[in-house]
Image (cartoon, rainbow, N blue to C red; front, side, top):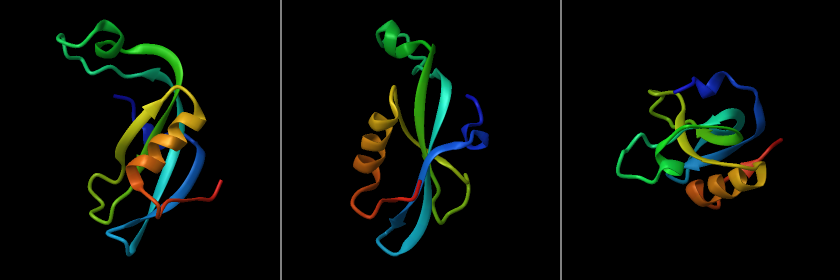
Length: 95
């Protein structure tokens, strides 16, 4: 999988880990929507697709790995919704 943390963020913000520790969240644009690789999944889910998409990545206080994958969407607004659902009401967007 491509190293998504080197991609420039389309949107970034912060969220509170355990309600008290501020951590960064980013949405990055990418050219490949990665599939599961699972042969039991339908081809549109199992296989990688060449398509513009947006990945949610976020940091945690643990620091390793520095960035954790939070999901993907085919639009920026879809990725915002994924991030908000995953990280909850403490998420605040900056740009």
